[in-house]
Amino acid sequence: MRLLNKVVILTGAAHGMGESHARRLIAEGARLVMTDINRDSGDALQAELGDAAVFVPHDIREEAHWESVRDTALQRFGAIDVLINNAGILTKGDIQSESVESFRRVLEVNVIGTWLGIRTISPSMIERGEGSIINLSSQVAYRGWTDYSVYGSSKWAIRGLTKSMAAELAPHNIRVNAILPGAVDETGLFSERLDEATMETVRQSIPLKRFVQREEVSSLVVFLASDESRSITGTDNLIDGGVSI
Image (tube, rainbow, N blue to C red; front, side):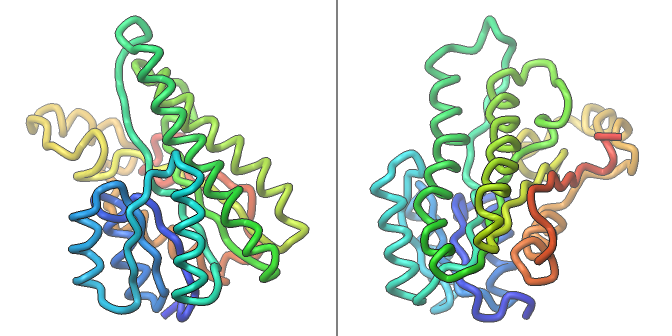
């Protein structure tokens, strides 16, 4: 129960890695405000997790939606301790195949959505005198990757936003950190299994010879949300099996 009674806002909670985080946060004693653009999946997860969780439909690009999320957290649980900016979209393609419209959409969701979350939620944390903000970036934001000019740019921007906000909010005892996952099994590019030969080629390119598991990323989320990491801020937390070496 490392997060006992901490109030957590988690975006992109209804599926994938976000769903893993939601289950783990509840197991650790958190009171959880889950948000996602997928209402049906969010409602179903809330019903399963019980009274400690509430679901709010949420387009993270919309400032008014963020205000609704904030108000729900304060009205339901009375405070906000942790914000986890998990929601995001992925696109892959070389610079000639990508479009300006796609680039703008990715930046609006991944970067502006994260920025709006911090902008909307941090005043409540400032008033409370403490808080933890966790931004999901990516291992592609640590080195150059072919065919990721759009997605990679957005995740590099999240790293920069994280460090800027860590400096800005530190005087208020608010920590801001980034998580940079690598190849996570059954997530992102690996949501649909590739042929076994391709999967083995990818696996062998990882120094630890294994894919990251969703629950391992969730463990890192819990650590950064908890008081165990109270002296850690402004960091890039890679969880990639050693690819960044």
